[in-house]
Image (cartoon, rainbow, N blue to C red; front, side):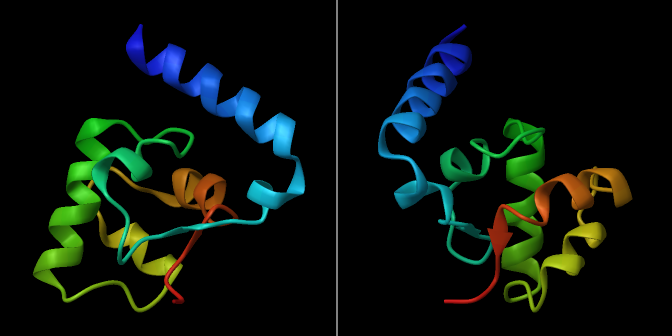
Length: 88
């Protein structure tokens, strides 16, 4: 319930500011678990797996490397790829 409320508030904020926020991508190498959970299809377990992988492998070299994270396959990678980056 809290996640749905947060997502609704975030969506309202996105619509009110338009493209200012729409172009921002979440950096896989610096994002917190909370930031990762803002991505469609990423819950607490997947966010934790992304962070664990990042710590164990000294970060991500590419977005495609997400496929190495437990729970992320081709479909999820495809849905996330436009919303994430590894660039600074």
